[in-house]
Length: 94
Image 1 (cartoon, helix red, strand yellow):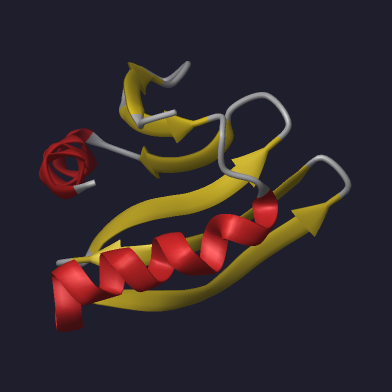
Image 2 (cartoon, helix red, strand yellow):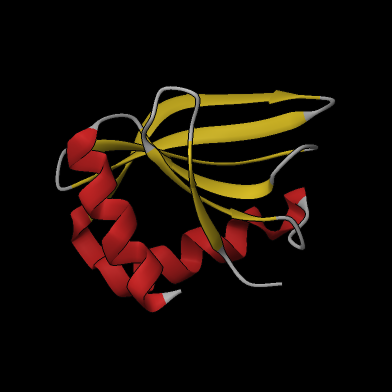
């Protein structure tokens, strides 16, 4: 299954891929790091529980969450309108 763009409850963009399991998150990060290089930096915030796993990164200083949950599968989520622009850029190479 390919990535599907939709909106979060807050109205910001998210890319979801229900076919990717939680153990696929490192490969997503590797792909993003390869494409974005030094533009992608890691934040110290991360979370893990039975139904989800996520961590925050910054791309050009803009907060983005990369994660997995039982409802969406893998996701790459914006937190604001600047993040929407980053999601559009990521969508173009995934």
